[in-house]
Length: 89
Image 1 (cartoon, rainbow, N blue to C red):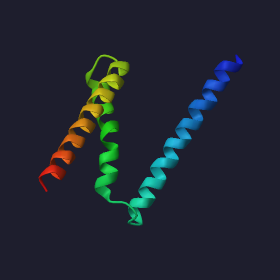
Image 2 (image 1 turned 90 degrees about the horizontal axis):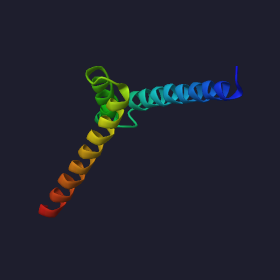
Image 3 (image 1 turned 180 degrees about the horizontal axis):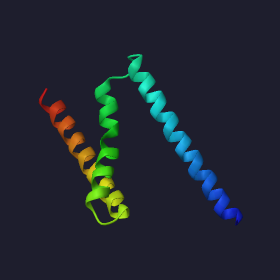
């Protein structure tokens, strides 16, 4: 095996371990009441969108790009709603 291929596998394994650790610590924080479950659910929205679009669209690359665009649109909408809410209160 080429050293580059080994390095790629090591990086992918580290990314996977990091994601598992983030998931476990997130569940632990919800269990101990450190964060609101709604906040944890909002963080999972892009993942859910990616999975749904991944199975609907012809390729996962398109699903990733569409997920980024949808998440960006939702973020801009949330900022606008928050700004308007602050303006009228």
